[in-house]
Image: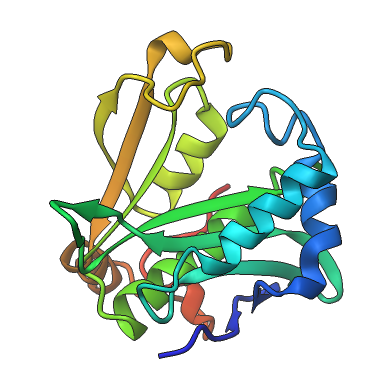
Length: 207
């Protein structure tokens, strides 16, 4: 299926397009937003290169990709479901990596979790994925809290292998959190949604 527009209680999640480039520049140029990714804000040229890669990220798996989140008409950040990668020259099927990045002024409002819940629903219900995982630095407490709030469980700690050894906390490595479709569906049965918003199915909103 083609990448589709998604909705939550507060947001519209639009598939990434060329018209969103300036919003990406605003987001990625903030060094605090990029603290656990590059340690510094990106230049416009770097964002342009990243934009091209983002547009092609999910080509091997229809329905995956980047989504730009808006509350009414205000941009808040982006969310990502991308293919899990390759093993022995073949695409790893049935798995996707979850990611998110928000403008600093929209932190601590529950939006990262809200968008992530909808992407989990999309991955499992619409696309038939059987596992979704997310990665971050061990010291990134905020991102780890978001992962836990939407039901992902800690699975492992791994050594830095992305050339980010100069980042503060890199010596503690990274962590992987994940959830399977069975676990997601079981959580929905135990804790059914209180309202009509499908994005909240399975897990209560964070405080």
